[in-house]
Length: 427
Ligand code: UDP
Image 1 (cartoon, rainbow, N blue to C red):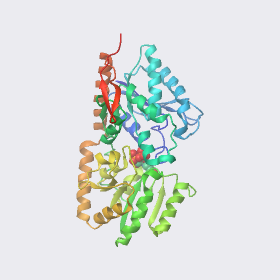
Image 2: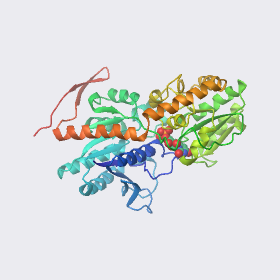
Image 3: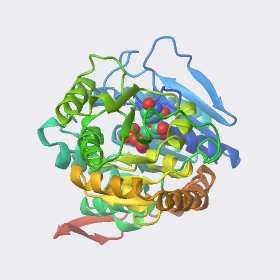
Image 4: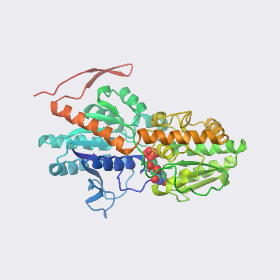
């Protein structure tokens, strides 16, 4: 198949760990490369965010990244990109005239807007591909958790619903997301769940391990944004130390500059909790260096308030490290509580402290969880498997499109559950 990915702000070429570069970049990069290994031709369209970027970059065998002019060629926060989606769509549709994709897969709501716009333009030339969408995050969940701090444009939620109704298929990454999509009225028949994956050759239990600064090491990895819950983990560390464990907390991610407001906030929490000398803020790290940090850890803690998917726990489990994880979003599916780690409620430092202390006290339990985590990742979460499952959805969607099946349409909502009717395309 000829596959178009559109990922407006998250380029496979970006450096990971900054405020707007994380799991989506990894997902688009790894899924594209794995689909190409299966023999498909993949083109990834992303917004040009620097004047120096070449128009086309060979990213991996069979994968090309194309930079489209849409808005100023500069780094712009993703919440300010919506006005440029028309230009992105025009650039993508122009390129489709040459590449003639079978399927187009949008990533994040604004890319969904651009893909549907490009598909309408292509339809006029008789070249409309099947349109699939992965949200990576939902506005309704973000607003529920962040309230007034949510800086998403007001158009986000209605446009997300519109994408859910107009795309030929939605590829959700976890069952919790599929549930949220049903609540938005997206027809169940159009939702497939395919998780994100992990690089099992890079994230391995065997290999170099860093020196620890204390007898026990707990690690968190992620973009340093408040909702990732690092502040809660710092508060939990104080209780873990109070329980008699001489532990340090390694925090990977963020801009790394001392005047970053989130770093200042986290330092303040550590000082107030009396653990400033035990919290090591490492800043952004290259993925190649992460396995050594994970292997050096007794546990990895992932304590987000909400988490659309969460690739970091997969990486920890692939390294054979147990995970203490909030029971939210994708972590509900990926971490098996009592088998590969422990689930805790979000925003609950006492629950994290209890779970961490229990595991620190039981090395044989940690080992068993670590082994089970690796096995789980190897059996279900390789990118090759994720690509094979995604390919199946692509083929079914493209075939339905060729047959002329119209997306199921939601005509009403009763108690939040859409009632549905089937329509067929006219003419
Ligand atoms: N990451 C990284 N360096 C950092 C911080 C994060 O390479 O300093 C990577 C991390 O290994 C993972 C991704 O960024 O692959 C984060 O993805 P996740 O889904 O956990 O969170 P998101 O950033 O999408 O919220």
